[in-house]
Each structure stands twice: as C-alpha cells, then as structure tokens.
Image (cartoon, rainbow, N blue to C red):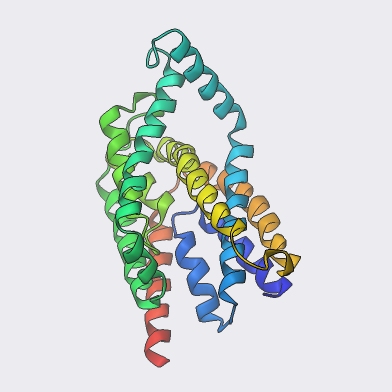
Length: 273
C-alpha cells in the first residue's frame, strides 16, 4: 500500500462511516474501481486502523455527552434506579439498540464475509440503501425529539443496524432511517445513530485488534498504513460535524441518488471486466 492509497482510503473511511453511503462498500469498491492490488494482510491491518480512527472521531465529538451519560448510568446503578434519569436511560437504550447487530453478526459472519468479495453483491446492497433512504424521506413523520425515544424504538433501530452488517447497506443510513421511521427528526435520529455506533464499533475494533496482534510479521509491515488512521480520524470528525448541521434542514435524497449511481457504475464496470 502506498502513501497515496492510504490517504485516499483513510479519507474515504472518514467520510463514509458517518454519511449514509456505506463505508464497508467504499473500502471494498474504491480499490476495485481503481484496479489497486493491495496485499490482504496489509488491507486487514489498514481496515482495523481506520475503523479505530473513526471510532476516535466519535469519542472526540461526543465526549461531553458520553461523560454525562456514563456518569448518569453509574449514579443510576448506585441508587438502584437506572432508568429514572433521562441521560442514564439514554445510555441503556443505546446498549439495547446494540444487541441485535451483535447477535445477527455472529450468526451471519460467513455469509457477510462472502458478500465482501462480490462487487455486484455490494452494488445490490447499495441499491437497497438508496431505496431505504428514499422511502423513509417520503413517508416518515419526523416530529419527535431524542428525549422521546422508547425501548421499542431502540430495539427497532437496533434491527436496522443489524441489516448494515452487509457491505453496501450503510450503518448510519440504516439507523438514521430506522430512527426516522419511529418519528424522530433527522438530526435526533442521526445523533442517536452516532452514539449507538460506539458500542458496536468498539466491540468490533477490540476483536479485530486481537486478531491483529496474533498476525505474524506485524512489525515488518509498512508504517505508511498509519496515515490512514490519521486521515480517517480527522475527516470522520469533520463529517459528523457537517452532517448533523446538514440534517437540520435538508433531505437524505441526495445520498440515495449517490448510492444508486455508484451501484449502477459498479455493475457496469463488473460487466465490462
């Protein structure tokens, strides 16, 4: 992997992790469309590092919220009233929304890994993301604030997140549309989506780091891959900040159009090859 490839893929990860256009799809499709040949071990290490980079971006952006939520949860446990405080309740709702993706991910692990190897399959899932964003924009009410979210809402949004284990179905897109389907406003749905990404991304990163530590010849791999970590962290933070502002008044339809156009392009390229 070259410096240029690491920078490009780091930027791609930082942008697409939080915009509703699927980071997993882009990390697979960008090398495919550009005819890059990246050694599998280097690709695995890179993907681990850039995911940690975007996880760090969420922590940095929401650190005040996270401290407040964690403090409220601990106080709630000590006082034996974990759901009395609104911030504590939000923390438990975030954890509840994480469960479906974790369980379904373990069950469908092999099927998901096979999908990563097929650009056409990824394109099909991108079409699904486009349809999902479009339908939600047209038919959702968007009248509720984050403080009004219920346990039923959290589980439903968690099920939407579970669908995003397939490359091409955007995690942020799925969870934001899930939130909007419950009546949450776009920005409120996005805020919950980003907060609920932390447990699942943290768990996935810890598992990946464990696998990473067991890989032979780790120390001989080029340090250039660290560039991807830096790029994904910076761009991820900026993407969160921009996207939350965008959603206050603008639609998800442009992202749906983008996913559909990218899917058509991938299918066309696959046909030519």
